[in-house]
Image (cartoon, rainbow, N blue to C red):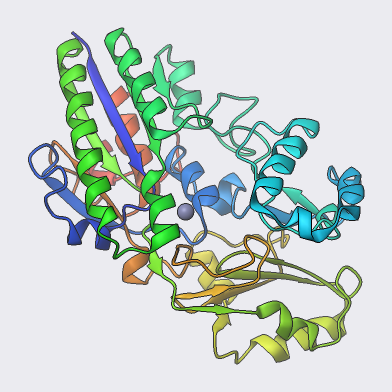
Length: 398
Ligand SMILES: [Zn+2]
């Protein structure tokens, strides 16, 4: 019977959340440790986990980026801006329009319009255009993933269908395991992230949901053990979750500068980051004057962005990156109009940002960062990681 590498990703199950619920998988996966996350959102972290590359290397960081030269793939959406805002700001309408834009633009990756104003949308391009879970020519803009490498090695795997909910994904995983033929399974579960966004980290529903996951993962393990000689279980996440105590209108600060959006500067307002592209020297000075000593956040210097693996010399994701202080959400922003109870995407050094991993076998002591999970996937499938990838060095020591 084969060996199976089972990789269960639970979105936003950070180290601090796990510490408050120590019973979670205590019997099945007692080997556990915190991991350092990557600054940004799942759009940055997921590609790093499956490639061992930083966002600066695989080129996926935030969702939207300013398109310095056209033609914009979203130019045609200008007409959608003629619809009354009362209508287009409704969540259900945005959801429908997201699907429409995704289909017309033939985007195969994870796509949402969020709250991006239609009048600004044609200034931007979208990073995750292709589905990262597929092999090339889909996948990452730069670099190969574990799935590309398994494909080249003639191995087989299961990866979740992002269009399904957790129940659907778990049912698909069971079916895949029953074949007894796959080498690696990767499943991404999203319910906990959604719950904590909506209700914060302290709701008792977090414990209920973790118990539900605990039961489901036991069922999956029972199924896996019936069809495989050895099952190496890893349950992990990409980032934690912060409780939000304040919404802050960063756009209003910019409006007070009297700069023209699209002429003097362009900005994108993520939930926790304002990303700015000054288009004139005067605008650059004004933006610095407004942001250099801001009480609610700070501009990240180049050395820090480099250290965090998110520095882009061409300014793809912004020439100035302004990160909010923990617990303060940009609201209204381009990701949502109102502050919500839970959000991630604050500085990786914040305790609530930390990710984690737990396993049914001892973990390498030098496993420190989420992108090194790639090394665990290589080790469990016998793949030699390409040079320059983040892996726990002890796993591949000669
Ligand atoms: Zn989230």
